[in-house]
Amino acid sequence: MIADRQPSRRRFLAGVAAGTVLGLAGCSTPGTNFASYSTVGDSVDGLDYAGTLDRARSAGYTVEAPFYVNARLRIGLPADAPALTSRFGDDARVVLTQFRYSETRFVEADFTGSEAPRLVIFDEELGFEQPFRPTNLPPDDWLREQFALLFPDGDAAAFVADAKEVASRAEENYVSVSVEGTPDFEAVTTAFEARAAATTTSETQGDGWITLTYAADGAEFGSFAVVVPSAQIGTRDSGHRYEIKLDRAGGFRLQVRLPAGEEMPESEYRAVFREMFEALGLPADRVAGYEFEYSPSVW
Image (cartoon, rainbow, N blue to C red; front, top):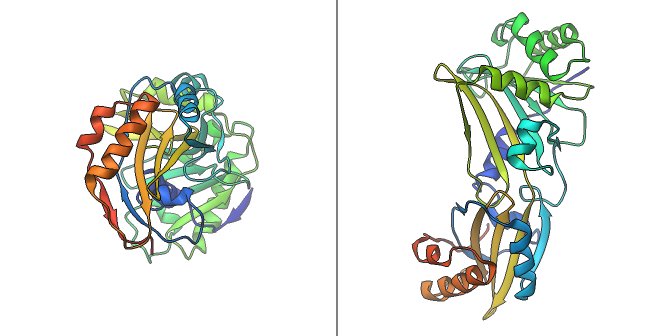
């Protein structure tokens, strides 16, 4: 194991997943500036993802796929656990796994990068500028138990020792330790399901980001963040670019792009999106109820 202090992607990716950081602009050409009308997002049950993309191509729309959140680069690790693939499909990928000791202290396993997995330990009672210290760590026995569950072939005692060493000299408000090993997602889901009294699954909004949360006694104790493939469907009308970001879980959101600072009638873009929905087999009657937010510029 190699101790490190790289910042977690947790907050960044969570923002991307909610569409609050990059939105559909994350799929556009870097450096371009444009105005837009966009929706927060919606979802439809029982979506025929492959069939919808086929209908898009048949209608003459452009289809760019696959995306993973807002990038073409595949992230995470295969969700090699029946409890995950049965819910999210064989192409689902795990990007984060969380083990929560208390309301404020938890460990997050980060699989978002191409480097070795990282275990990041947080204590949310710390302020942004307060450095993490060994006293902010969960108990040793609890840390060893979670590590052994996720990495059964790893050295749990060495991980705890590394975490303490990094915490003793930390300058950030978290501790991050790299781990050489293969995670056992099946073991984790089995343990989580045996303990859970309730599970919740977040809805996607076109990026394919899903959070599966486990709770017992009214408190969350663990979760998986999973990504499924998504696609961008586009067309041009009267010089404007219309885009539907659609994921395999049935989430989608809409955006129309136009020159920076330009505006257009609401009836015009609603009519185009309704036509696209009808061609794709999506519920076209919903378009009338969507709220579109206008942004005069990306910058």
